[in-house]
Length: 141
Image (tube, rainbow, N blue to C red):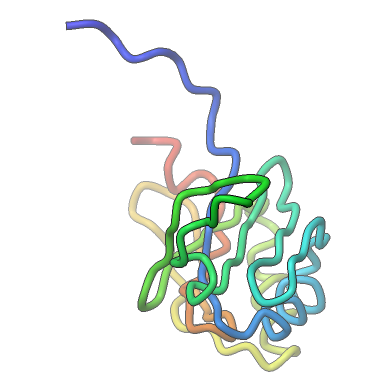
């Protein structure tokens, strides 16, 4: 049995939302991510540190690409709430909580993990579970 080649990390993560305008307003206006790509009715892309957050309208991305497609990306999509976690410095978690509450975003959970670290959970307009966490929640594993 051969060993898998080395990976250097996660490059992109995807969430699904039917209302892309609401996604743009949330991810740029509240979270502060930079929008780096947009195809109306299909997707919007954001830079999140070294990673890219892709937000697709699943009604468009479930459709297989036509023979004329410039980039024949295989169909994909999801139903129900997804999850996306962003890392923040430990001292910034409380600042994020206050910021989100001031913007009218409800905090669903505020956890202090047994292995160390804290994270807060809330929802984006599409109902996806979003988390901001101290990376320490994974360091001791």
